[in-house]
Length: 207
Image 1 (cartoon, rainbow, N blue to C red):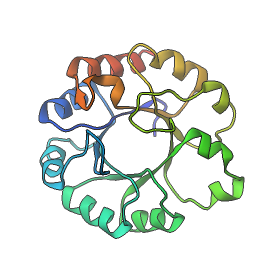
Image 2: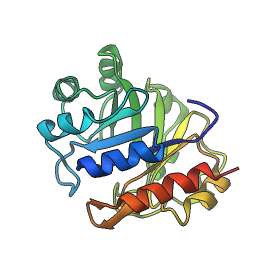
Image 3: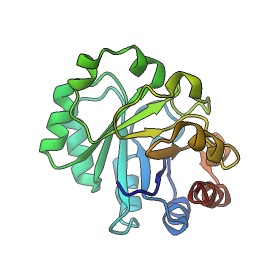
Image 4: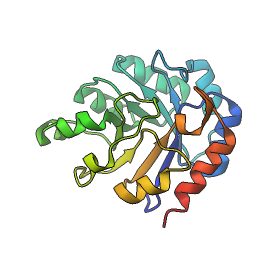
């Protein structure tokens, strides 16, 4: 990662919103493969969308409680660069993903991360940590006071971020990156290109 905040726009499902995220200057675009989300996409649709993503922008697949061989198979077929594992995956699953050539993000609820011991955290070999609210994609925010000073690795903040609040939250917590989904939607699961642009502009304006 560079000194600039890494920005991921997640839960994309249309060509227009992928293009909006890329054109706005996002560093990564995310596609949800976990079942039960209004943002879930099929492998076929994701492949079409990833083909629109230029070199230099990460194409991230979000998976939750899925078998690692299935995940790697989907990611390879779709053309993803990065795997975000957001469930009960074992440390060995991250090792398998990295051995397959993927950048890895370990996503976990902030309260669960704070409850882990240093030994539990050290067992995971991942490239980035993502700390989210208890219910991913819910739009709920993480408590800044609970996190301050408790994260000692490269990490991304998610959960309840919007164009209106991201500057303040980043200033308080100083993460290495931010991830937004519901905060740039006009309705649940429907991304708004104007809100995507506004979010990226707000993050880039942080001094």
